[in-house]
Amino acid sequence: MRAIQIVTTRLSSCLRPIRFEFVSSSSPRLFSNPRRLICTAAATKSDGGRSGSIVAPLVNGAEEEIQKIDVNPPKGTRDFAPEDMRLRNWLFNHFKEVSRLFGYEEVDYPVLETEALFIRKAGEEIRDQLYCFEDRGKRRVALRPELTPSLARLVIQKGKSVSLPLKWSAIGQCWRYERMTRGRRREHYQWNMDIIGVPHVTAEAELISSIVTFFKRVGITSSDVGFIVSSRKVLQEMLSKYGVPESLFGRVCIIIDKIEKIPIDEIKKELGSTGISEDAIEQLLQVLSVKSLDDLEDVLGGAGEAIADLKQLFSLAEKFGYSEWIQFDASVVRGLAYYTGI
Image 1 (cartoon, rainbow, N blue to C red):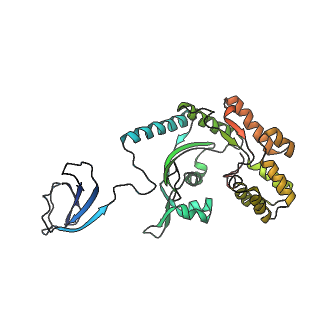
Image 2 (cartoon, helix red, strand yellow):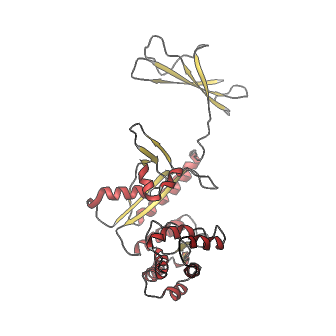
Image 3 (cartoon, rainbow, N blue to C red):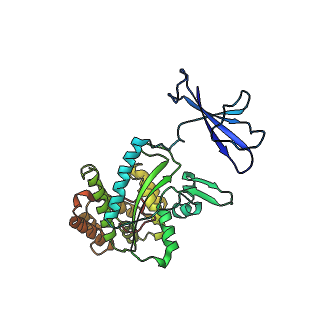
């Protein structure tokens, strides 16, 4: 058995050596296939004096306690060994280069934020998905589950000291305590590109163009992935047409988001529970099945903002050269409860 001895010193006069022993069931070999890691805390030196960085082996009986340490990372997290780190750097470098090519300035935010920042955006239910706690100053804080609230906080903090429009990008480590699925861990990285201060759809057109550029750089084509596009204004115009109050918009979005997850009869039942009439529900579901702008225009007419915005986006897609990457689908509503427009 081989041991590594690491000495930690404090400003006080005490010295507390820590010994890490790698124990293998086979014959002793230096760092050979360690089975478990044992941390042993040795007794404090009686003379209280300082020592060098190399400490003599601990004598028998000097150990106070033995604690087994799991050498795997916490559930939902991962290590990046050199070969993994090379791949991550390659990917992140593409993120940064595309952001630079499209004129974005790089920013970063604290990994630790106030808990209220995320609750303000997503509601009280987000607390169950946060790594949150109370710090020693009695402040409720959380590891960030995403970057967007931090972006909004910093923009508000800067106020009039920055000139619009803003084009910021960030790559951040995020944490979300939720059930893990294939390719989805509790610790993840998020690449953000944000445009603030551009009220028309040219911002969305440019953002899609930047992602298409990234896909092409890493060898992904339009036959592999695509963009499904909709607009909040489509739903707003439909609900307004049937006298449904704006206050119900968030609830309707949540219900519609379940269309591919539960039977359509359940969708109708939940929509009916909000007070929407049966006729309005049937018309709404008909609109949500629309897959082309021409069909949508037949239902809503061509005078509304929803049609105008979507037509402009698809026109810009032609000019940017990525029209084959995008398609319209009125049933896409995720995020529409707190974002605006497309």
